[in-house]
Length: 364
Image (cartoon, rainbow, N blue to C red; front, top):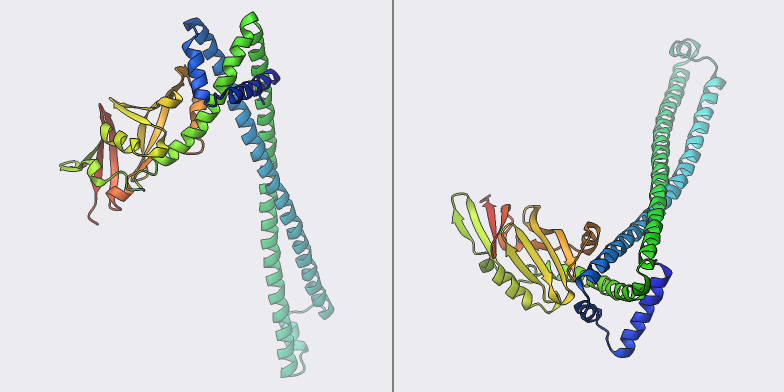
């Protein structure tokens, strides 16, 4: 949860926007930022960084709490399994006791004793069969007891590990909550020190928080839709510009070509890709979101975008905030439908205005 005053400001801001017809948080933020000084923007950026940190720590706390809940379920399941296994272990032990008592009722028995004490061939065969059955039953029971014991020990060791993991995660959660509370206290102190301007900045931050939350959700959907452009036949083999060389098959994807494809997809939020030397710049202009990174090869056919830095309304995004953008969906170009099963991506190079690929092709 954000601090109490931020929630109040946030709710007031939302209601004001709805009543005045200003439903687009991005337009509201842009309007306000256009009217502030460089110094004010620096202060706002500092505050926004703190808010990002608080958001990330609280998200981490929720993740750890969910993990604790799942471990608790596993612990309870293991405890039930151990109780059942212990009951079966006792039953097998009792079975072994019954067999041993049968031995005792027969008295001291040996193969030689059976032969010497038998007064007829039928008596001899009967005694041998009884001894064979008892020996077989004892061996089977002992084997089952050993198996049951091993399963029991394995479950108990797993339970012990899970309990330790649970304790570790609970400590992590406590530390995360403590850090979040410290950051909130620092944030409130920072705001208080702004004096008469504190309400002014709180109002800005409330609008930015709404826009940022919406940007994260929209970017996740955009990433998912971008990853579908090959699957939906929007990118064709001709777009790869394949050619043969002594090193293998060379291909390229031009910036203009892929942006033309993106522009025709209504659900890609006017995403723009800019291939520069060694880097890729991805921009959502309407959301004032910029990400800079590169493609890496994943598996044999996929290019996955890895963001290294980013900004929102020209304000720096922390690494954790960038990770949040890709939490649900990655930006992926799966080229398998175009390259086929007998191919492997060997390298990817980012050039000015295009992406260069080297593909290894196998005939078998």
